[in-house]
Image (cartoon, rainbow, N blue to C red; front, side, top):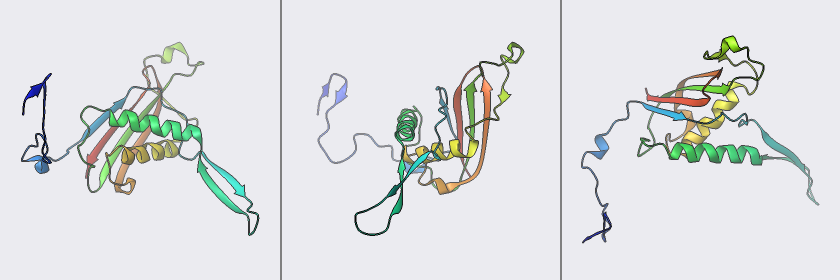
Length: 170
């Protein structure tokens, strides 16, 4: 086996380099900052249509709207790109703390600049958080969003928009 341009060629089924104590690694806390303007699309914004087949009864069909799908894909891509994410999903019960900071409103008085102002408009925090929780599962941080046993979500208007997430095993 030789080195080619700084990479080592490897021709076996075994991993190239795996620490022996990899399974002893315990996640104590995961902190994530998504440096984006938080989207206002939520998991609640699913489409509903009534389907009338040629034969039989009509039924209601639910589907994911394109905007929700696009937002979900963005979140998953950003979460998978985090430098120090866990190698495997965090097992067991977890606590999640999320702070959503939206850009100041255009009508925000200048005296408020530099402060965090409580965000009390739509989108509501529960639907925002549900979308993010689903994406944390898809990105490999959690096994299932049912693991979330404790959580806190805050929404603010602020000077530096973004989403701050802390995940702690309980």
